[in-house]
Length: 253
Image 1 (spheres, rainbow, N blue to C red):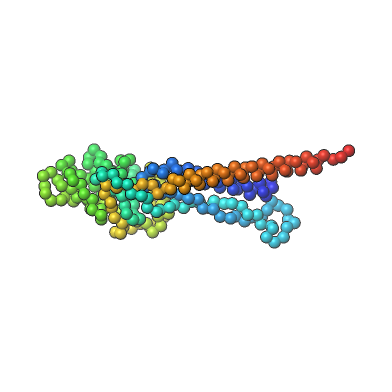
Image 2: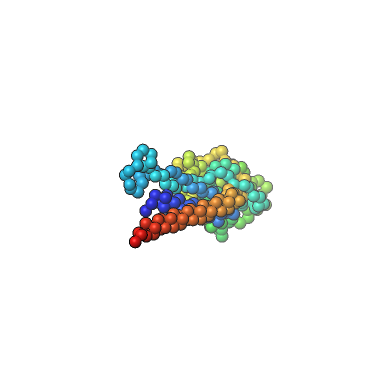
């Protein structure tokens, strides 16, 4: 196969994978706490296919390689909800939750109460406090969450606050190492965690996705145009090669 075809094919393969990343960002543009992914590309030099008549740098062929993706961990915009159980984090921390018997992490603070009065995510996972799951009593009202995550209520006719727990916030030395599990959850992976004392909780707000919808749609159009342009170029190269073979084979009588 000619080098031009190999190089074009390598670019088309990376564009296809980039489209998957962009499409996933677009699909989650309205997902609470979602963090966008972006593709990483690099030049990959290899020997050509395989005529050994060139010298120096002409012997190296530059391919396109997508080495992976990186996660944009920047904070998304805050949206007020006026729901006392909704919480957003100002800072780099994550909420700790219990999912399928294991500790997981999320930025989605759309919380509610289950049938036993425990604070849970919209998928029913227990929200963890510094002392375990946070549980409310049937007579609790006027729920208040302090910036440090301390949850207090007024119980029945009492005039003084009762503490129900403290939201556990966890930060990581390298959030990009967190493993996405789907349903807005992350596993710790190889990232080192520690209790976060700098981030604050903002009650009555939800952190929205940090995806730039307009930018991602523009990137999607660019990927589609690049893919089409390369496909046309490869077709032209193929037609040129075919024409050359036909003319060379047309030996005069």
